[in-house]
Length: 336
Image 1: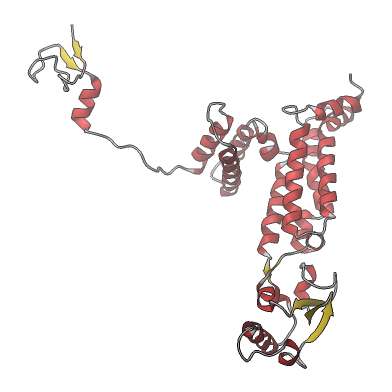
Image 2 (image 1 turned 120 degrees about the vertical axis):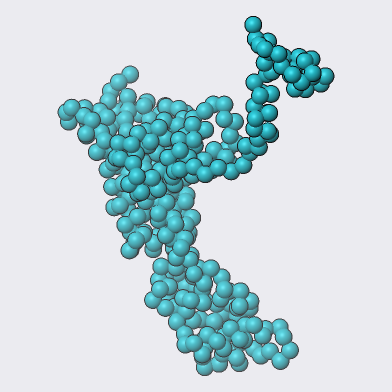
């Protein structure tokens, strides 16, 4: 019978006291054999993974009740997963059915899955995120939105840099005949015409006016300040209208879910019943977005608030939290 001897302090090689020699049928522990053959292995480190494997790992971590992820880690994993799925979908490395299967796995993640990866919610979420990224990329310096000659711009910046230094001159003297000085609320401002780009930006001065008010005090800082696209103006034209406009928002809020309900219905009545359960939550989220859209704030703030409000409403109405969505559907369909 083969005998296996453990490794101990007195017998580190697991020889069973055989003076380092093993007799016939005497075997050391398997770990000793591995150590003799391969030496010490250090397997710690960073390993590369393909996008699909990484997505599967993130899904497993987010679904596992034993993963012990912090709130910040779970949020980071969810955002990484959404980016990976978008990348996988556009890469065409997987078939349509394989991508759909991956999305179904992501959608099954408790609570956040249906909100972030649900087929009905994904188009609207991606459009809102796209609008957020695009509006943020449009931010620029205030001085780039002023309509004045290069010589006047150079003179204004030179004067602003010299304020408080010896031999500096007053604003009226430095910019006489070049820019108009006005007094607002007891303070002096340069009233400078805005260029054509400025119409969608939030700038200091009269709301919707054709001029920008730059304070004569701390002028250099005011010129370097960041100007953000206005929320209402962004959704009224161009890319913003397509991604976040009222018409596009309504189509994305109700269209995907309506398509899914209709394609899985056997009759008009069945479609109406399914819509009674699925669409009220979408209507509440859409109404919240419209209300937030009326706020006077930069587009990045408005879009972010709309996204968070929509997700919060869908989370609260879900069966995982309050079940109000189902209760409302029961009420609309006359069920107890």
